[in-house]
Image 1 (cartoon, helix red, strand yellow):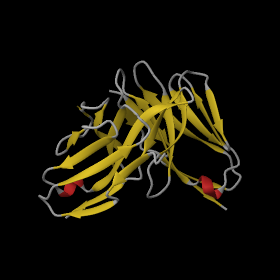
Image 2 (image 1 turned 90 degrees about the vertical axis):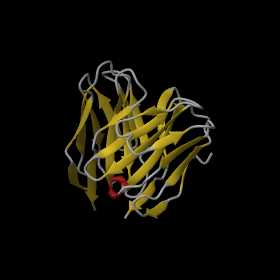
Image 3 (image 1 turned 60 degrees about the horizontal axis):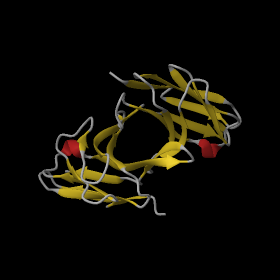
Length: 114
Length: 110
């Protein structure tokens, strides 16, 4: 199993540009999440999905959109990037391991918006 | 509002010097508490899930415990490779969303 993978690993955008971050998991997990991590702020939930075709807002959803057309993929879109969206983005999925709930994280996407 | 507070923010230990990290939470109807380790430049790595007060889990030099209001991550005789940021999180009441603490950055000097 590759676990949770994220594409791209690093990206530089200019203000106003758009981009899509891709998250893929091969563990057949229902729940998937997008977080951003900023110094001093910890991990904050952007959007999440409890199954194929479903999405829901998290703590900081403004400026982002998501889609879950396939169970294994969860896409995060920035329609018009702003410098405030400079951050490290992590995708995660949740499943059961040995009877306990476990959340698996991807390696992260570092985004710089100029 | 559901909250998770971790202390201390940073901890510096000498190799072999045991200590504990704290995670206190205010959430209605606790459905589990999660501990993670995060190395610089990487995603968080799952360590433990605790479900009820009194529960303990161990992995190598780490032992996590849970009470009704807080959890402790005890590190026994740490090594430099235990240096990382340790995060805890709880599900927000009635949802599948996790609320994370800001983490404790642990540095173990040889």
